Amino acid sequence: MILNSCLRCCSQDAVKESAGHVGVEKYIAAEFGSWASFRPQYMTGSGNNKDCEEWFFDRIVRKRPVPIPGSGMQLTNISHARDLGSMLTLAVDNPDAAAGKIFNCVSDRGVTLNGLAKMCAAAAGATVEIVNYDPAAAGVDAKKAFPFRNMHFYAEPRAAKEVLGWTSTTNLPEDLKERFAEYASSGRGEKAMTFDLDDKILAAVGAAPVGVAA
Image 1 (cartoon, rainbow, N blue to C red):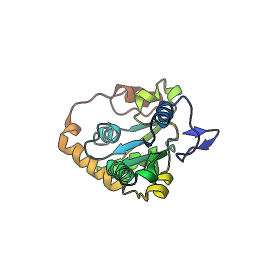
Image 2 (image 1 turned 135 degrees about the horizontal axis):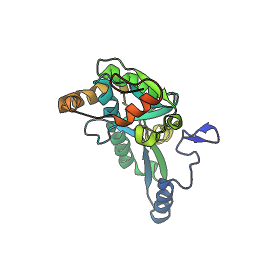
Image 3 (image 1 turned 90 degrees about the vertical axis):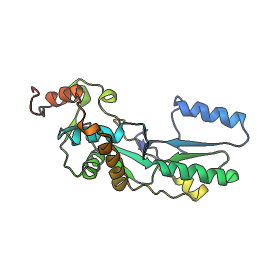
Image 4 (image 1 turned 45 degrees about the vertical axis):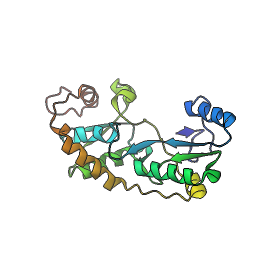
């Protein structure tokens, strides 16, 4: 998240007052004597109901180009669900320390969007062709064409480390292998899929796959 040209990283840093969680945090602070707030970002792990990693796998296993908006250098966090669970457990076990605190539920390592595509390909034992593009020039809404925010969306878990003694166990390259194993066993990689929006993007930038007019 960009704020005045600086990357907002810490849970104590200023956030937009219009953000939905800000109002909730103000309400619980006013109404409850003991509370803590946890701000997760992108999560991975077994049973995750978000199609973030699968979005990459869908294209990689079909040997399709992976269109990523912008430069692909946008920085983000992806954390394993076990890290969220361990952070919540520590807060419950240490209520006095956690009271009144806001914690970023994130791993302590960032990844670029292009880097994530490469990690997903490695997890699938494949290679990937990344196509970076300008959404405006391609005539598409990046929010509809891509499952991640087209901006830096990174935070760091300093408060959880210092207050709760929490440590991250996320190992994204290995965790993505777990996700791909589930993806492969589900049969999703063999299902018929259409990629109309991808094809529009690829045609606009002259990188259309075989069978798509440029």
